[in-house]
Image 1: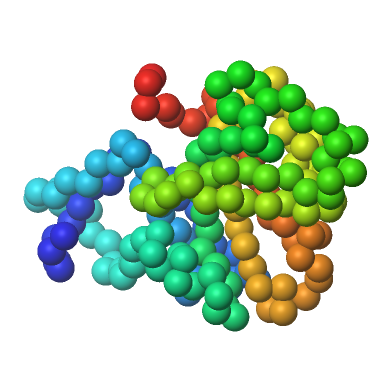
Image 2: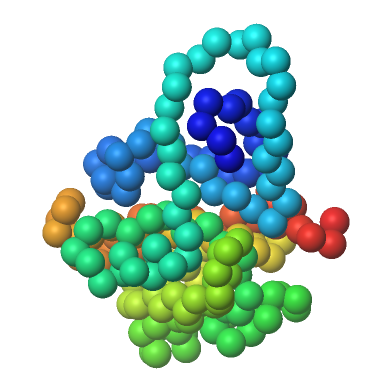
Length: 176
């Protein structure tokens, strides 16, 4: 990319940043997917203000994990839920999950390795209920993480309120 050029972006994820969570200084976050396309837009006649943005790689996310600040939003494809593949709909036993007090989800972002996301206590139970409520098997997970010291509260209550499962019908897949 060259400074001063105008680009057209197709097939991306976009979301507004909530100022209360302080995930980013910017108003929006744009995440690229496996089929994102960026091309130079020649002869743009639409005037707009110049703005700045920043790309965050998996390495930056990983380096920021042990700091005391907030983490970036993560959008990824779920690969396994409690050790079960999403090819066949996973069977989640709410009683077993409540007894174990946790659930493990393997998530892969567009530019990084598969990450293990542990959900504990009420967050695990709530995820299980939400996952089972969809007619089609959910395949994409959006996780927003915050430093609990920034806004207060307990970690488990924040995970539930910030965890979203997006049904398959709203996503594109490489084999479609």
